[in-house]
Image 1 (tube, one colour):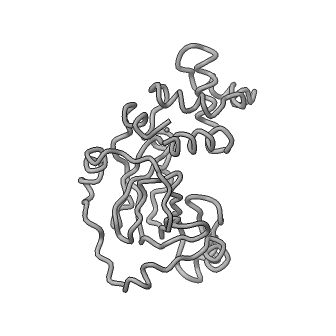
Image 2 (tube, helix red, strand yellow):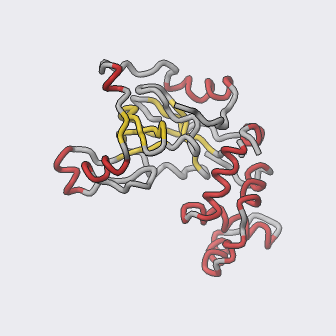
Image 3 (cartoon, rainbow, N blue to C red):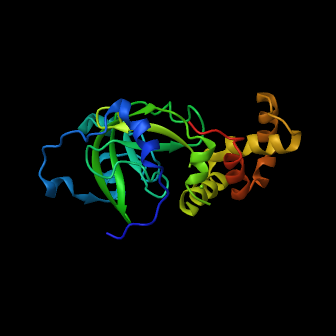
Length: 226
């Protein structure tokens, strides 16, 4: 497998966030061949249910009744370079703002993307919050991710990173709230109220916010990652 050069934090930054949940991998008793099995998301979606594109898809209740799996977690290393890459290992997951991942608290069967269309099962993980990235840590990721949730097997908890997150937030629905805040802040020269952000949302003026503006907002400390 040819691994891309992805943004990473310093060893001290990683250790500080993972120490509370334990640095040692959760013991896995399966043989190495089984652990190393790679599958496609299309196969998982067709066989077990759940959206084949979302990071945290929920399985429809009728399918979940067949096999007992309700929630998936899929870690793409271009977005989540600190996600677990060995079954049972702890990891860190970036999010776009404090509390952004709080709605995904259920234990999840979690896979990490190892190659194009090939995903490896890491184990059952649960997200938990940890210290947000500082401005300096964000900048150290390159010319760019944001916040963290800590992860472990019992508790899943940069051109590369900056550009990937900036690009996706500039074009995907899940980045709209960030673009609204940036647009309102630029228009008013101060932190906007909730009503002012809602007005920006309604007018869709946030569509003028570019990926470079998003990266600059995080690098300047205007946006905070959890």
